[in-house]
Structure formats: structure tokens, C-alpha cells
Length: 68
Image 1 (cartoon, one colour):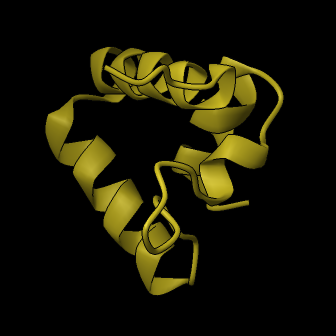
Image 2: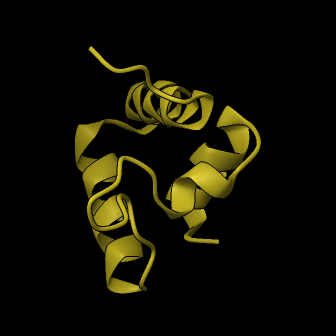
Image 3: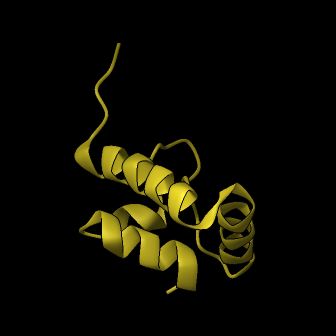
């Protein structure tokens, strides 16, 4: 079993926190909107994406919510 890097773990924790904060439907809506704007959740063949560039869970949540 491989190990996940810290950014992937932070993203997963941030996803759960955003889900609790905004609800599943809002989280899905935000992620879809961001995808349409070109924000990539997973780069092809990788477990990391644009959200992993954030340094903290709060930055990830902000990116999910605002697309910035």
C-alpha cells in the first residue's frame, strides 16, 4: 500500500470540512463550477491537482467556494 502526500491528505480533510460547512449539494455545485472554469481536481494519472497548490485546509475550502 502506497503513502499519500500531505497535500492529498489536506485536500481530503478540507473536502470533508467543506461538506460539513456547506452541505454535499453545495460542495458538488462548487466543484463542478470550478471544473468548468478549468480548475483540475486530479491531474491526469495523478492523485494531485490544482487544489493541492493551497498551503492550508482553509485555503483549499476558500478555493472550493470561490474558484480562486
